[in-house]
Image (cartoon, rainbow, N blue to C red; front, side, top):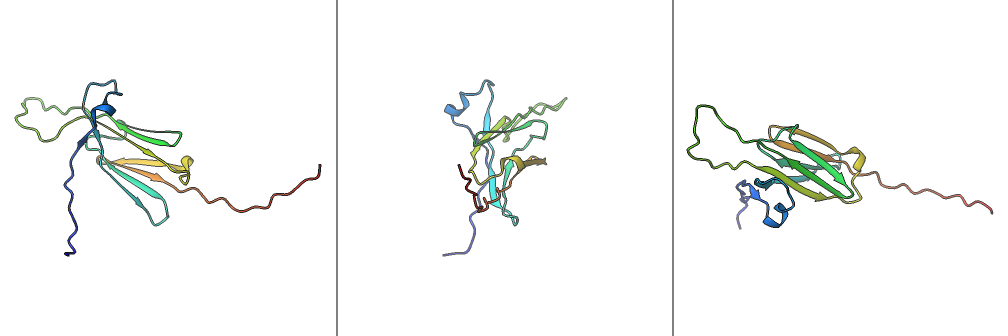
Length: 137
């Protein structure tokens, strides 16, 4: 066996028709590729590649245990030029994650820089053992 790492070519994955039918917009929706890792402070981090998106076009919601990322990307048009060929498809982004109870929902943070969304998911403090006092009556 060789010690070479496999290289995965980044590609945009378009959402399946079943998921896309829930949307009211008639345009392509892509699933952003993500890296999920644990940092040295024992927090989880999500890095989502969303080219063309910025902090104003991204929406992150947390409802019950589901963290949802959505972004709207506008078409880029250059005045005085006609597009001859395009390999990059423009569309919106959508992805959802189910969070475990180990995540502190009040401390979630997000940043956007150069088309990469970074979400910090801090782990909740473990419950401390405590003695419960018994009262008479």
